[in-house]
Image 1 (cartoon, rainbow over the protein chains, first blue to last red):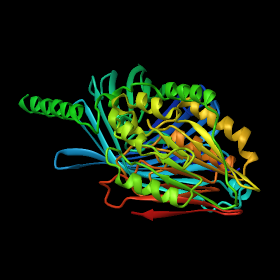
Image 2: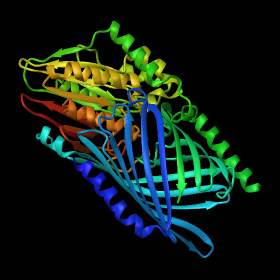
Image 3: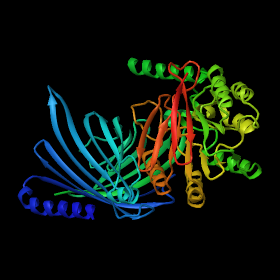
Image 4: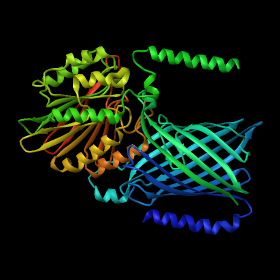
Length: 242
Length: 282
């Protein structure tokens, strides 16, 4: 119920603010992903929608994720809010960003994370570093159902976040492809010792409309020096610049 | 170009150093000797031929001794732990992984220290170090399963203990399914339920060693809550820590290895209506 209200408020605010903000630059993104991992009990299918609003050097973003098929017993499974600011020191351009991630993965528990990031590009390389903070929490329902429980949250603080990538083409080319290693995705903040390998590509299929595809591979225990397969997923999406 | 060559040379040197090291092994960084699913299947095959241990104690109160990360070679602290457990007439002793460095001879050294089962029942599980240098072969030969359960029966109650193999920072889909089924079918019949793993679930403090992926943590913490798991006890981090989420306490052990600055082990005390613990510093 709480999440339904949040979603309604989000869309209401969006509807109210949209007409006022139309002169600025908007991006809408819709994507779907399918994959499996050791704890998914088979394949899962998800969809997500995100909106980005850029006003000069400042960008606001919001995204929602929904479970279409899989073991997560609820449809709404993620909220992502972000803000970033482009800046430069002398001639060195970079962006600083902050994000908040809400991930209700069960009726009984959810995860709230937030983080601060700094990112920059150098020729075809992309670098992002930051720190993330996570709390695993019990829902109100769990507190009612399990009143004898002693703790309602566990925190994991100061988690190093990173993304190091290489693109074949420059950013303004009509197509691109690349590879990256990261522990951060739209609705997932991994521990620093759990990197994910990412292959991605995108192409402009019409004016202002990009099609993109990604393949993510997850290997558990790489810093244990006892690596083992954990999971993968494919993502397909469109990005529309208004 | 010169800088690039220097960097590649440094990387190759590090690879060679790690390859020659008797503590770390570079090969496992990208490729395991066996998958966690393969180890799980071997553990299940062992369990089929060796029934789970069932311990009966004559009174309602009993102790279980628990330690992790002995990293044998050296055995001074291991023997202090075992002697204390025998002296306390503990119901059993659990070894939560990284019992060795993964080298062949260390498994045999470790095995030689263990008392006969009639004196002290022992319950080892494999940690990431035990898997280095194809260590699982030696582990399996000497100790068998790394995924199993045992029970302790008092005159009035019974407790369930589940030992799990997450040495590669994941339990794998098959072991997770087994754990879920075991909790669904068995948990309700017992008073207390405690899980033992090597790799600790949460990064309660900043650490450099690997933990399970977040999706696996979410799955496991929900399972623990739904099935009223009292405790999850792990090693791996080498520094004690505790946290609780719902009904479940998550305990991380200090390392017991001889070269550790502050080694300790844990005594799990089970009484008619309490389950408590204390760390014992060496």
